[in-house]
Image (cartoon, rainbow, N blue to C red; front, side, top):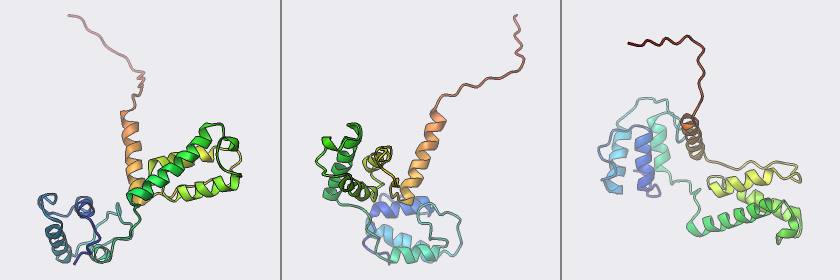
Length: 183
């Protein structure tokens, strides 16, 4: 059976991404959905080519093994997320005030760098990503920090970038003869 640590939202997302044919998964209870999903996965043996959500999953049996184990808890609870956003805002305040330590409560740059390293571990939060991007623009930073972003969030960001590029107006110049006829 599917472990209880997987939320209904996670199960619905798995059915959508891996195109599992379950009718109205949103209307089912979590228990019914997990039973339907498990039954469908057990009775299917085909290999699929979709590494969208979980890159280590290549077959339905791999997905069953993943769902039978408890979900890796990489999410922060509400209080921890608010603390991380506050720390990111402290870094943004430092960056937007001219990269001056005198405008902050930090004694030296190493403390600020340690805070930035802590914030960079939560790159799925947009405020944390923005804070690290601004912090890397400081001339005092020798080793640039890369925010840790999950595969799911990377896919979302890439899709947003594609959508933004498609919606950007573009000027197209065609150098070809144009024929006008008047009647």
